[in-house]
Image (cartoon, rainbow, N blue to C red; front, side):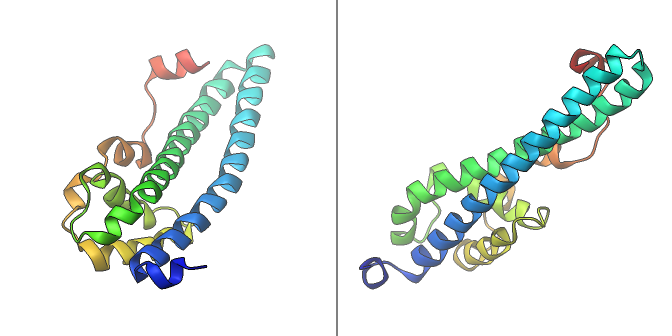
Length: 160
């Protein structure tokens, strides 16, 4: 109740958007886990029935879904990190060292995850505060996992 009187506008806006993002992430995580479970079972059924070509193709879809799930988990971990550092962030103008990767990665993800509209609001909050000075610190593994690339034959066979 007294947070509104004692905390900055940045702190309050950021905290509320982060909480809404975290709630939405729980729903998305359950959905993604169900899809992955279905894909794994589908691959297993195809292999049992001797449809190796179909299973080989389905593994590509499972690979892409696992990469996307990793990205969602990274977004969730970044939100947890930022929430834990929010009070210190609101007191200083510069971005804390431990958030130098999380904030620009969330800003990058905002344009790519349509099912997380709160990220767009967070992007504007962070842009007002830090502008584009943090852009070079975007997590490169996150960027790589978002790109649609075909897994190698070895990865496909290993996943089968």
